[in-house]
Length: 136
Image (cartoon, rainbow, N blue to C red; front, side, top):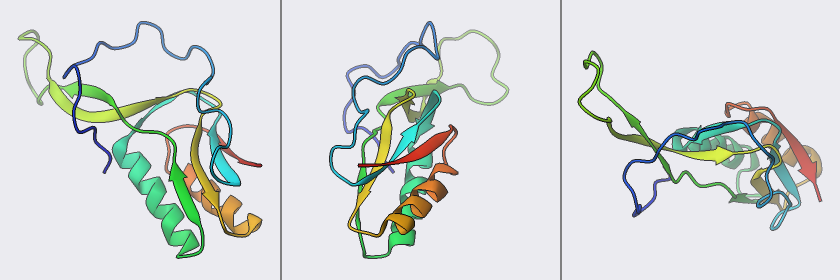
């Protein structure tokens, strides 16, 4: 699964205001002909990205090429079960990627349009947000 090799800060603050704004960075197709675009806000874990990637690779076999445009770099902490209140913040548990509406998450090329749209649609079901397929 995707994990950062090194992080500047082990524990991050939670954002003050969530669900604000749209994507301004990764909002166009750069590599492939087909892409999966987020239409809602969400945090996507490295496990969810990996399960979507597996759906894509199994669907296209050896036919096309796949690009993952998002990377989980935000640490999420968690305290153990049945731990009393206080005693500081929990240890880093997993990493997530903050996705805004309009973010291109996955791209594909080298396969027919019907097959690519079906594969991207199936991989979108594995993610905790609404998404749609776009073409170049």
